[in-house]
Length: 259
Image 1 (cartoon, helix red, strand yellow):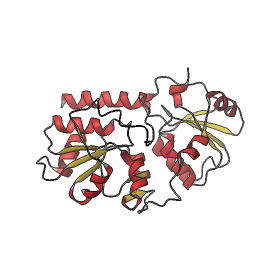
Image 2 (tube, one colour):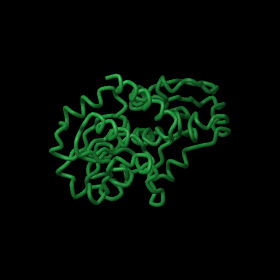
Image 3 (cartoon, one colour):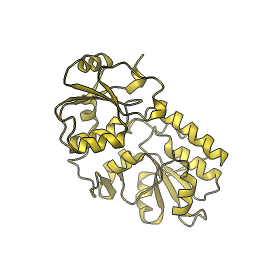
């Protein structure tokens, strides 16, 4: 169990400082060289094996709830109970392959999960490192988006729409001076080693924020939201759009971009 605690603490630090980008055709697979012992599975092969393997989404609850491979089990790698939950759901005998996935080519969570599973002697371990962004493009019929499957194309938020909502630190500060603005820090407590100085700043965990957004709170305010590295806001945007929020911006690169 000690190795699990060490692993969990290391993962928390890694997630807090590592940016995860949506996969692009020319991005390649930069993590394969770092994890040469782990077998990967292509989109074509995963589609072929779809009904004959365990597909495991190792991301956060927010990410999974927004979008996931339809039959995927949700077993977050960041939780201390990861191995126990994995064994309960899949067994360790290798009767069916176990395929881990996360956000895409540069996302290390799936590799971390596979490495830990191999350490605990699970059999037939693979990583689908193309990730959810590639999968929904290739197989929307096997994707669940905001609770709907097949994934509706009109609900999927394109990267350029997200990019338009991200503003520089200078623009973020200017907007924060408005009387109608409310600044919201959505980082987890362990990520809040540095608290930026913004007026009218509120620290609201994501689960609480989603509940308040669903009730229409802040509808009359300009929402200025930041996270650790500018990536969690990608998933939050789906709920802002679902609940009809129009006046919101994200801090580009999150706290990571504050010098």
